[in-house]
Image (tube, rainbow, N blue to C red; front, side):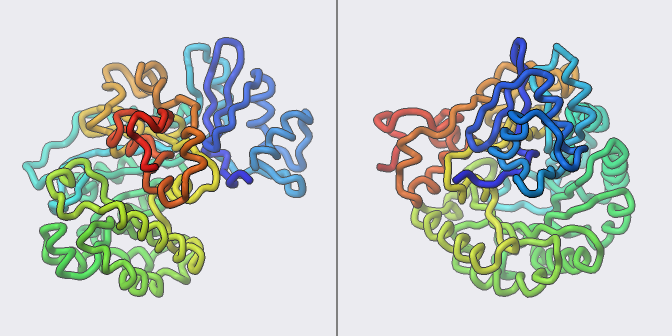
Length: 423
């Protein structure tokens, strides 16, 4: 049984005289232009009146049900339909665009994936508004703004400009990732600009938060930020990086946070395992062991069963799916850092950059040679599919970033004899 996926997790790739509709569940459909157009136009038709093969395709891929025959908007349909006639575009869809606008930060987290520092502030020279506009032309509806710490006093007005710019271009969701320090001061300004969700870091006890972030008030700042968001109409993600040193606090974190958010319809607690990139590579004492990973997955599975939407794991769609899945990197997701380097994944933005913005984001997204590897359709191999659940999840066979970091390949599609297999 396939996992139910939103259409936003599909990509439309142009081939010579047809299109490929790529499903994260490994599905691949080849459709001509008329069929693709009909598929997209499903969003504007109730009840559906379409060719039977398209309707069956939509039903098979869980885009609609036989009873409802109704689809939720995945991206800006009009923009994608316009691009069907642009022969120079190789990939037509982009759902999520993330902007790493600065590496400045008032914290120095031991596991910071981007090695942020409290350095003399220098605004980025990247034309962020142009990138946001380019993303909209591919149909993007979700924008993430991150760092470093994006909500710094020196650039809060500019961040609000970017948020308003994106919302005016049709982005439905604008997420600000923050350590929470300045959020209570600026939340009204950001919401007035159009920010819809805030992702706030939360680390555990005050002592551990001080040790991990270098800021003695980190826990208090996180709590104040969470309180400010819950007092508004914004959506909330509480993000906890899981390390070896706060692993024994996870149960108490759940017990502390869930009563705060259980009645909020758009809030959840997300756990993110520490990955050995950026500063985390230099702090081995924080790295999780294999047994830690296995226990973490078991904990998350139990919490998800008990609390449903309130507890998540980063990329939990891939980790908890029954079938081999492809991640969104390079298909419907891209990230641009403060130097204008484009990549398909946050974890690989410095390790495996795809291209530099010498011309435009459209050119980078469309023509860079490395995108081909990210857009490979092959799912993880059959050995991985047959492997025990704990090993398969620990291997992160569905995660291109971890596959590359551990094995030098974006895909878990090599034979076990090559040393990639726990079995």
